[in-house]
Amino acid sequence: MLRRLGEELDILTCPYNVAHQILRCRFQVHLVRCRKSYPDAEVVVCPFDVTHRINKQELNWHVSSCPKRQSFEVFKSNETPTQGVTASICTSFDSEGTQHNSTWETANTSFQLETSQNWDNLPNVPSYNPSAYAEKANVLRAPVGMKPAQRAAFRNAERKRLQNL
Image (cartoon, rainbow, N blue to C red; front, side):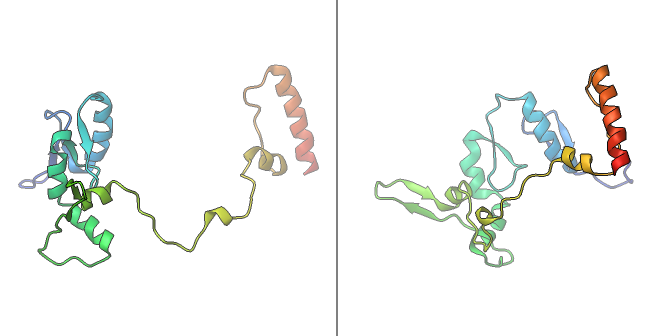
């Protein structure tokens, strides 16, 4: 890769192996591949950004200070962000005195967005069958995976089919 004099590359360190130095544009691909090499690593994915991989012990701290959390908070509340203001965690306690972090709990649940579409009410349409289409279309078909006698019979049937079209 060529770079101009004085221009710095944006290089990140892999959370699975600190010896891996990766360009930011290739980082997400590297994480997927490197995860396969380290299946026993105690690394979890941040709920706000898939490129943030954190040790299990540091997850609660990271969730409270993740820079991508503000965009999640804005999405959740449908408000416009105020410049220079960071989102805060809403802490609540239940009847047993257990502390709950509403941002973390919301990040781990799926959203149900309101929509006017109902995919259960769609008409029953058969799926596309390419073999059935090719039998009726003016296209050449090849006898794939057939024995010699079957290939000869297929070719004869194809000649007749194409003459009738």
